[in-house]
Length: 97
Image (cartoon, rainbow, N blue to C red; front, side, top):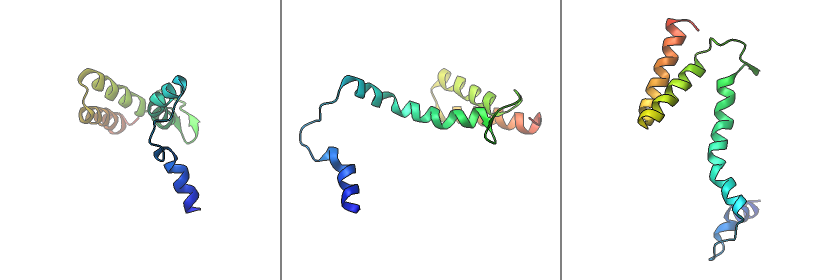
């Protein structure tokens, strides 16, 4: 089992020459990290307890929007996290959303 796992994972490292890859596959691999990130984050923002949000008063999506806007404005990850969490905590504890 270990040999099969090593061969499957190291298959691309065995060759000295780059493997030919179609353009569509290169394009798909280029956007794969973004697709994976959206697949993880979108359900967390839009669902609660396995169902779509039933109210607009949920602090997660305004916090994500505020963090995203800050990131596009300043391009700083730390600031994005601080702004998003500040909005989230304000809505959660001050406004009891």
